[in-house]
Image (cartoon, rainbow, N blue to C red; front, side, top):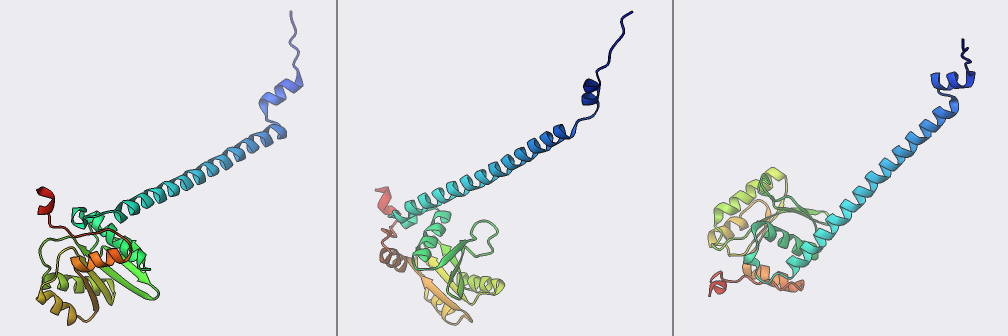
Length: 196
């Protein structure tokens, strides 16, 4: 008969990991954790850089827009945001569905206001001013801006003057002057000019 000889170093290393093996395992896990964290940080940095690049391209595109009326409503909000930024405001864009009438929130110094952007062809009437007043009340703001590509009726201007808040109205002509003041080539063109 053949006798089996057990080797103690073989059975003990299979049965229980030694302190050295455990340390190696923990070191590997720690290295993988560090690599995972570094990877997540790198992904975050790349994402921020990509978003910043997209934002710069968007601003560049908007700052070369000639016909303001050709912009989509969302692009028009972005265009107005660029103008406020060039005027020294910090701008937070809140527009979109569910914005409760606040397209932009602007801040310069201690002054904080809200902006409604209306890319309209027809003149804006008093009901839109009353909506802005309601929005300002709900937002707790005392300063508001209504920026449009069209104009305001006399009733709208009177409604803004008697409002309990400071409301600045910027019509299409004022918008073009404002854009040119900051070097933007914006114009409010008649839609019929492009069809012929």
